[in-house]
Length: 314
Image (cartoon, rainbow, N blue to C red; front, top):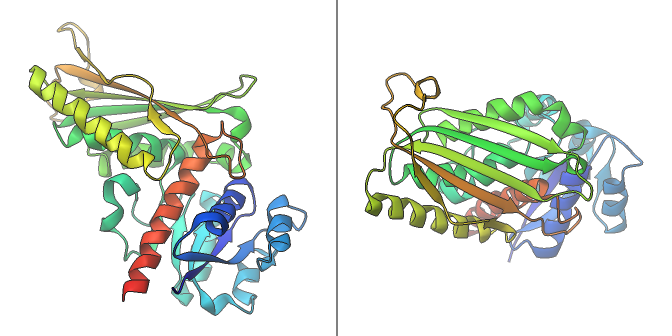
């Protein structure tokens, strides 16, 4: 079976974890290059030891590599600003780009929700770690009833937030909020990220609040079942993804002000849906508490596998 060669730009934690996932378990992918800018990085050293072609000269070095023409998919695990420059340099070569930064040049993709919709796009965006964890839940609720407002809170271990994550905090909130609406289906979305400095480091925890109209028990049970099914769909490619407790649906008191949360013209909701999640990493390269990084690499691999499988079928 022929495999699609992939390159990874960014030899930090996310890029190195991506490489190990490709080498250990990918069905339709094989490593073509590991790209960094720090010749002393652990990611480049590991790649070289494993026989993967490497360059520390960034995307220019990738383009200059002898095997560049054979590479079909390029993962970008750098930063939002760096991805803009990388995408521009790679555009003339027709490579498929999977963007793991919040740059959002291409369409948002959350595999459990819309994987099949953008497989032909030249550049797909994997939103953010918080988005990958929570948008499936918002989408699951919106498949049953309209979601007037959705708010997500992503709490991650401070140790799992590297320089790229910290530099992109503003982009995180903007990109995730937009994707909650465009992919999750909420009329209005908001995202919050918390860097938890606790020792020992805590696993990624996510909370999702959706304001909906669900007056009868049958509708509420349908919401619960939709969320549980979606959680199982995400766990199929992120095994450490799980609900921490039963989905909670509570009535909103008549005197509770919610108007400022709603989009223009939105109906006043009757109930709040609360979903509590935990994401444990697979510990391929990153520690198990870094579920925020693992869900990004797992989602990226899922997209690349589908793209490569489609090429193999043609």
